[in-house]
Figure 1 (tube, rainbow, N blue to C red):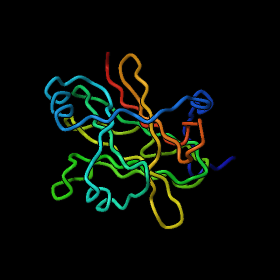
Figure 2: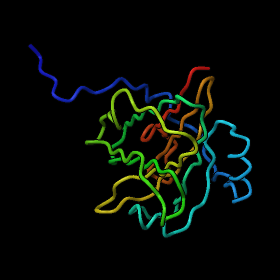
Figure 3: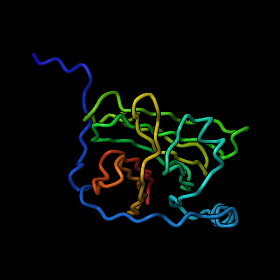
Figure 4: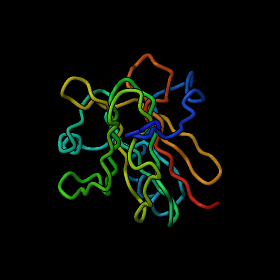
Length: 178
């Protein structure tokens, strides 16, 4: 009998390789307010105060968050295929003095697809914000990210290396009944 202590969830990481990336267009405060008011589902890159990243222990040239909007009953599932240990921090605010952490997921070891609970979690009310980072030494450095929409959801993808086009290292999928 084969004993599997930590089952590894299936993850088609090969389809997330060789993707093109450019610096995202970040929403300003007015853009964030407009997206929240419109309740338009999607992930939108935003800048945040350095104090927020300090509070989360994240640093680096790519510090940013994603404003995430979704309908009630949305599910969040994480997967990774990375040598770098990855971290997904899901928070309810960009205010460093009032932020609450909803989820703080880390990959358990390199090249392990487990990233958070295997079946994910049902999300509270929108909006939430996501910060993507990877371990480097004793630090968490922000990742480069991109988003992909699909029918019934979207996903936030990330890579740790500046020169890489492989966005299979960090994959958070937001999905709901279409």
